[in-house]
Image 1 (cartoon, rainbow, N blue to C red):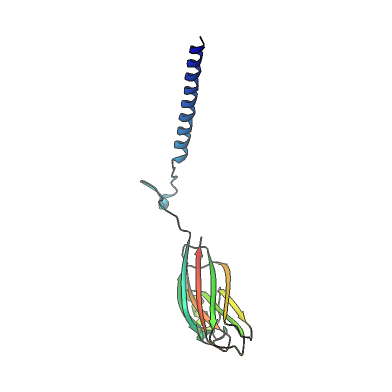
Image 2: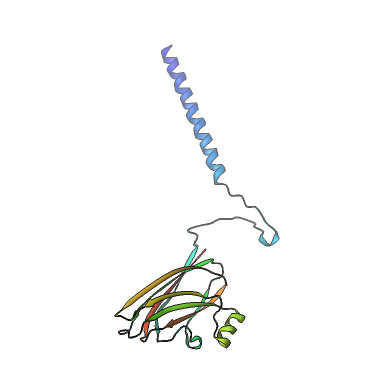
Length: 185
């Protein structure tokens, strides 16, 4: 009798373990399925949908080793052009500016980078009237002292799909500048 009780107990324990394993397997299968809900025709999704690897939500763009001679921010026709930046698909940008002064400063002032929307009307205002509309800007203020290196960083919201990048230097010495533009969603 004792032996049959042990056998029955072992069978019940085995059945309980199997039922737990089956329920866990069914639950994990249910939570691995992906359901795609189609939106209007323009966003129709068909076929297999999969994501492999890391989904990137950011991109780093560099403008390194730029020599910026003395040119004030207000001298818009003389700003140093540093290319353009495609921001389409990104919602914000971190502008990181670092650099080194070439010599000893007699006159301090801000050194900076300005992103101006590459829109016809905005660029016309800049080129014809010297007015900068909707700028994204990072600056580092340099005092009249023996500064050799500087850095500054700011996080801003992107408002246009493309920007033109300009650099300025309101000190009396040339500076070597590195500008890092970290685009994020």
